[in-house]
Image 1 (tube, rainbow, N blue to C red):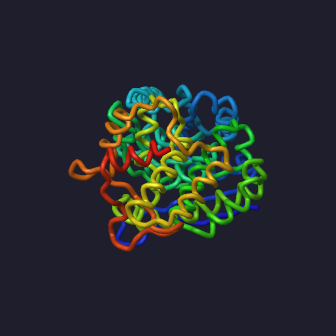
Image 2 (image 1 turned 90 degrees about the horizontal axis):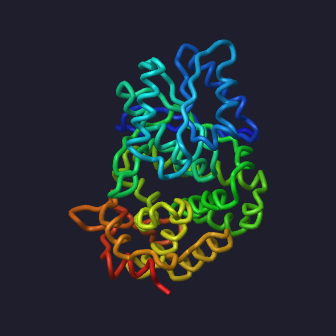
Length: 369
């Protein structure tokens, strides 16, 4: 089944248009659609080395059919590659290939690839189009849509970047067959976050279908990808630059990003999100009245999906606190968290974040027994 829709922002946001396609077994069709839509551009495929072997090389060859000029750029897989240095090397490769403003960048990979390639597209010749083709569940349900791009620095995650909306997001859920089990479960963490933040009905369906999702049953996975993208699209259309309602999508992420960085990137993003969502739901019980039963349901669902909900032993509390202070939602030196008041619902008002104390609130919720 092919599912497609178009994301358009509401006025007075700057005009952009993102075509979203979710369809199993459609990677070849994506190549044909891209080649037909941008026939005269240099097509630059960006991928990490692992995904290049699995998918991106064959995809680039298909793009090159008919004599089109295609360049494949790769970098070492992993969060440690999401740096200014990697971006600079990719930029040098672009320059060496003769890329100009008539360039289209196609990101084929997970969240790291999407963030790097999107940032590359945002700044190359002050902006060229980008297409996102996610190959991980995490990127399909969340990272590929919305235009957030960036790199990590020693002070924290995603502190340097730009908003650059993709022209197309094409999700072929059959690509998930090559995804390691741990990485697949990481994507489920973002699905739980989206449901807990935006849609109680989706959360109930995740509880009902947890077994099917863990077994990667195709229709169940495709349904979750489509519904999460629909939900995110509605939020991004209202708030493309993350100035208000979009903060709901940051539920769990203040703690998650701090945990990720404090671990030296040894804890993958999805597992950090699961830990962060569980911890911030406990914090929401204390701070804004989230029912304890809702927090328990969130933690139980994450556990059923094989995800961690507690800080690992040995995680440096001081490092967590240091990285939390660098979070992008920090204002005036005060750390803020986006906390739901009910499953699928945030308190009314323009600011969905609440100030939290580092030691008493954030560290206390993270390391609660």
